[in-house]
Image 1 (tube, rainbow over the protein chains, first blue to last red):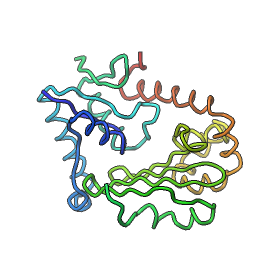
Image 2: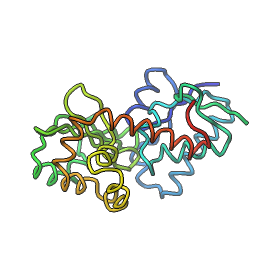
Image 3: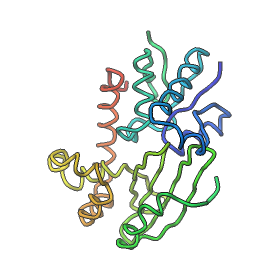
Image 4: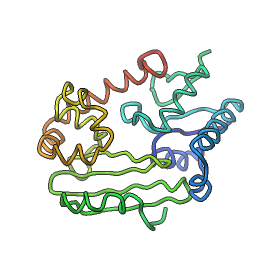
Length: 97
Length: 138
């Protein structure tokens, strides 16, 4: 079990580096050649792997700074569909069902 | 991070020149999706462009060592929520144009209405939590 960090750039990279945690990452040479569907598929697989490992999920960007329509929003919606909810601090997602 | 060719600078250079912005910092991160951060300053306020996994967002701050706010929140306070909501799609389709058309009210809002902007952010967080997770933040 590890720790994964989600959020907007650059906060999620900075927090992941600080905590030596994982974050979704693909080099630009690969990312720019993927279709939008392939990009989301890779992102979703990262989340599924984190869920199956039982990783702790931290939010580097608070919800009041979430940009609507962002990859971050899509990640949160996916995790919500898998039963995750913010804890009292709203900086961590916990599995509630 | 390394500073190399910036998509944000090339895409928004005319906007920045027209509105008297000086680029303070450019960082392009090719190890992470080609993400970018560009911070600019004008006599009115600071502007931050963030390219996050290919999507570009803008944040605005009254000055150095002051908080950053999503530009859409500042626009909403500057124009009034009714006006902003009525033209939401138009403004969100081109945030730099929305900013350019409303420089005076945006400048006043970011300097004089920070409490209102921060409160809007908190309200939005609750709406987002309700919408995404089906319940507000505790």
